[in-house]
Structures are given as structure tokens and as C-alpha cells.
Length: 449
Image (cartoon, rainbow, N blue to C red):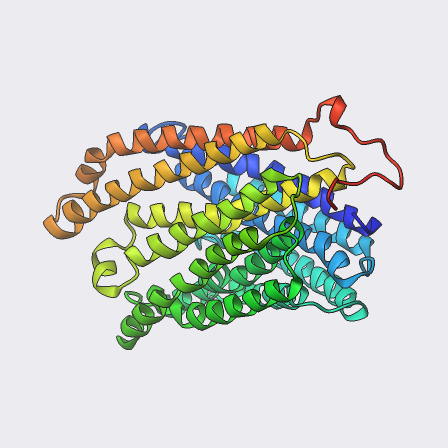
């Protein structure tokens, strides 16, 4: 760690891991409700559990992105953060907003729009926090060295913050409402977040492999170009059945097909960089998470996204468990695993300790990845059966759900593996054996840095 202000990232990572634990436990609880539908139905209804699960996911991923930016931008810009105090103020605003949103959900107050259920005052708080963040990192980069990594990261973070404005637009017309809603949800996870992912992945591979910066930057710009080219008009695959003109069926189908390309490039980029790498970095767990993130993202966001993105298929499959299969694997690979890679790389330096508990960390990787892969296959089979029985044959919805009970039980088992892996990961980050502690002081560093 070169700069004192990078320590800001530590508190963002701690907050993110706390919410990560809450998010996976909420998901496990939601999974059990599929098995036993009346479980906690009076005390904690399913819609509230689901809101907490999905909102915690979004907030902890954003906290991870913000923390990653505060960690890598000083190093890339070769200067201290413009204002560490503002970074702490931003974190407090986000945590207060998170607690306020959860409290509101528990008493039945929410906006009703999936993923954007936050009360209005929480939305404004998120906007203020985003503006503080943009000011802080932009002033840091402007006053320091510019690199391809900071340029792409800034572009992604500026765009995702500006797109949040659409969360405030809620027209009476249902078609317009869903269109603006997708401007936030799709253009976050399938456009701007991809830029953030590419920049953070490039930084990690640069540090872990020792490949020349020029090689990394060439790959980075190609990935960004394909992500924006495919992702923006790829939004059209959400416009098929919401009342927009029919030409969106073709635009959405064609450009959504291209969305596989940036994820394939990111996977190829990661493995080529490791192959070309000259550095034998001691933090093997961080490298495993980096490679795992790009690989699982390709299959989850790329392959499983393509499975039901063409409008002829989507006509039957949209809103089924196939969507859930794609969503779980895509989010895990592209953004969850990436954040966990950053935590694994940065936390030893932030805590002035050698890469520690790596075996436990890597066990957590295989538990979470294996559990999520099994969950994806189970939900894919369930969704295929659901599509045929419900959309083709025309069976009653609840009869179909009863027929899928064995798949929901298997999904719960897979979710339990993910939760165990997540808790093991958090333990591996925070608990250190005494013999692995590096004595504090100017010379304290991670070997290989």
C-alpha cells in the first residue's frame, strides 16, 4: 500500500462484507420459502425477504466498487485521495440510507418497483453519496496521473451514477415506467458496471501477473468498446413485451447476441495475462478469484443470457426460473466474485499482513462457485419444465409450482453451500493466525508488491 488515504477502502470493504453476509442469509431464507411457502408468512412476508436480499446485493456491490476505486485510484493516479473525509461522509450516508431502507421495508413502506423499492429520501441520499464520490475521485484523477484503468473506471462510475436519476422518474404510463426502469437496471448491470468490472479486473491482473501496462490497456479498450456497443442497444431485449414498438424485438435480439463478446473477451484477457505474466505473486487466492470471476461471468452473463435473449425464445421463457438461473450466475460471476477478488487482494495490505488464510479463502471460492453452478443448473431445468407446462401446455401456475418442489429443495441445498462459503470467506478475511502477522512499520508490505 503506497498511500495513507487508501485506508478509506478498508471501511468500505468491511461494510460490504457485513451486507454480503446479510444478503446471502436473506437469499437462503427466500429459498426455504420456495420449499415451505407458509414459513414466516405472517412475521416476514416473502416480498420483504426478497427486497432485503436484492437490495443488500446491490448496495454491497456498490460499496465494493466505491472501496475498490478508493484503493486503486491513488495508486494509479500516483497521489493521495483529494478528500478522505468526504469518502467517510459518503460511507455514512450510504449506511444510514441502507438501514433506513431496511427499516422501511420491515414496516411495509417501499416504492414497489423491483430493485428500486427504496423510499424517496433514501434515493436522494444515494444520489448525494454518488455526487460526493464523483467529486472526490474526479478531483484525485485530474490532479494526478491519468491511465487507461482510471479513465475507464471513471467513465463507468460517472455513467452508473448519472443513470440513477432515472430511478426518480415514475410515469403513470406502465410502458414508459418499465422503459425508464430498465434504463437503470439494464444499463447498470449490462453496460456501465461492465466498464467498472473491466477496469478493476485490469488493475488486479496488472498487479498479480506483472504483464506490461501497454498490453493490459489495449485489451481494456477493446473490451470497453464491445461492452458499450452491445450493452446499450441490448437493452431492447427487455422491451419485447412491455408495449414498445415491435422493431425492438429485432434490435434487442441482434445486439443482445453481441453481449456475449465482451464477457468472452474478459475471460480470454484474464487467462492470457496469467499466461504472459512474469510475476509469481504470493496472493494465489486473489488470482483464483480474478480468473473465476471472468470465467463464471462469461457463462452466467454470456451463455445463460444468450439462452433466452432471442425474442422467439423469450416469448415463452421470460419471467420463469430460467431468468433466475441467469441472474444468479451472472451476478455472482461478474460482480460478486470480482468484489471478493478485490477484497482478497487489498485486505492483506490494508491490514499490513501477508496474504493469509489462503487455503480457507480458496475453499470458500469452490464452495460458492460450486453451489452457484449447481443452483444454476437446477433452476435451468426447473425453468425449462415450467416453460413447457405453464406457457406451452397451459397448466395452472400453482400446479406447476408444486411440480417443481424437488428442484426448489435442491436449490436450497445449493444456497446453503453458498452461505457456508460466504461465511468462510468473511472469516478468512478477518481472522489471521499470529505467525502470519507482519510487524507494523514503514517496511510492512505484502511480498511481491
